[in-house]
Amino acid sequence: MKFVSEVSRTHYCGNLNLTHAGKDVVLMGWVDTRRDHGGLVFVDLRDREGIVQVVLNPASTGTASSKDFRGEFVVAIRGKVNKRPDGMTNKKMKTGEIEVVAETCEILSKAETPPFGITDTDVNENLRLQYRYLDLRSPRLQNFMRVRHDVMQTVREFLAKEGFWEIETPILYKSTPEGARDYLVPSRVHPGSFYALPQSPQTLKQLLMVSGMDKYFQIARCFRDEDLRADRQPEFSQIDCEMSFINQEDVMQVNERLVRHVWKKVKGIEIEKIHRMTFDEAMDRFGNDKPDIRFGLELKNLADKVKGSGFKVFDDTIANGHAVKGFACPEGGEFSRGQLDKLTEIAKKAGAKGLVWIKSEAGGKVSSPISKFFSEEKLMDLVVACGGKKGDCALIVADEYEVTSKALSTLRLHLGEELKLIDKSKDVFLWVYDFPLFEYDPEAKRWMARHHPFTMAKYEHIDIMLAGDTKRYGEVKAQAYDLVCNGYEVLGGSIRIYRQDVQAAMFAALGLSEEEVKHRFGFFINALKFGTPPHGGFAWGLDRLVMILCQTDAIREVIAFPKTLKASDMMSEAPTTVDRAQLLELGIRLAQKDKE
Image 1 (cartoon, rainbow, N blue to C red):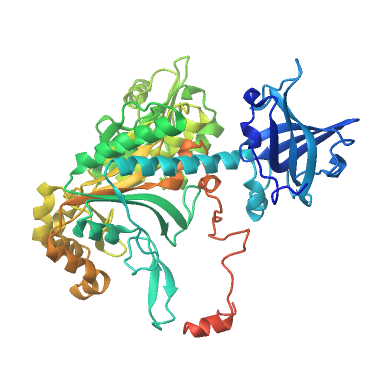
Image 2: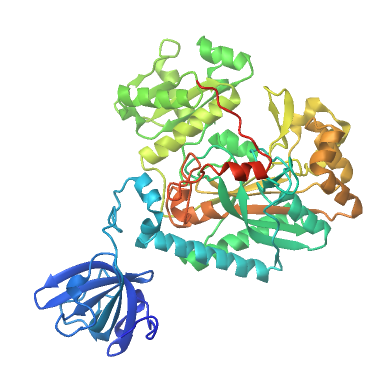
């Protein structure tokens, strides 16, 4: 019998159940395991939907000997679905109540012994990435790909019903730097000129609003030549959207509906309250603009409590207008000196000069390296001021506000994981809004856009921009918003600048000359002259969203063919060198590296 060419598959392995008992089926898939029980051979046959047990009698299956079956061979089987005998069911398998008794079988493709077991979990990651096509056969990664598919289809369905049109924008585009380095593509037809792969479709989606498209979306591929980390890749996908004639609340509402729709459809979970917090409040309470609010350990301001203590670190920090903050760790009174030294090192790696701890032991004793400056009663007051009680430990940092925030936020997240304070059974969402529009770069000695140069200031702050009052740029708040889930930023967006005078003021604030603006954004500035509606938008990080839904902490797991932390593809060995003839055709000559 010729399978595939003459006989088609009738069912997926993992979809069979008791309702199919007595039916003839044709299955095709991979041999997962093979067990020889004398006269009968039992094979677990696997495809993307799961595994089913197949019973083969070598004397009657004719087409191919079951003894020839090996792990990862691709085989086809025709047989009858039977209910398993009483006491022989396997409750761990979705198909554990039935088995398929094979009548004929055929090997479609033989396989060498793979370098690791398909279901092995303890495999070197580099090896997994080198043989990614084998790793993708594992039920775990196939489930991740299924979730990714479900999310994409669910999002498309939702946005279409909300009136969004799916419109594609170019991949080969103009370099309009947005904070990261562009990936450049040389043009053969225009020697010396380059396209850029888009960091996002930002200007293009705004031009679609100028064009009257009203509501746009696409699942867009984006590219950023920047350093990688566990939740970032050089190329990634985002759910990119833009809307006309809307305000910030409109954007938040449509995304709250989208969140609830996706979580209900994909996970079967009802998302209840979606919290809201200004940027200033998030930084003050958690030291982080994307805080994980599934647990406490909130930061407390201590300047008033320690002012004039005689402890030089605190006094000098307060005199210079900087921050003294801390939080209390529950039952931290039991911390050993080694544990406290480790926490101090974590704070230092995050930028702090040191860490002050105050340990309140359950028996009432209070100890601290600053005990000679404070009485035991005062030290206990500081533990309480940090949100603690007897038996807890206060951790305090005194430094510049940003350094203090980063160090304490890092410690907070470390202890949340270490002490298992995080309720990982639920997903908690938080809007963070009212971000600063600008941030000052002391090295470049100029103001930079915190979000991007097309973000609208809050209306009450526009006059500061129009006046070019550089001394007050730090006061200007943006109509920008992020949606945070479990400490990850999953969405970022803003209301956009649609007025020519405000856009010109923004470019001026960033120190761009008229020539630079015309070279980089001339086409965009010109479009604003022809009637631009008030508009705003947002982009979901699709990869990060799927990562959270799949409850994994590595974004590589939910991307079919990911890159390493060095932006290389270990399977194809990209990037690679190219023929000199290709370079010459593009007018490119590689510089010789210094022999050193």
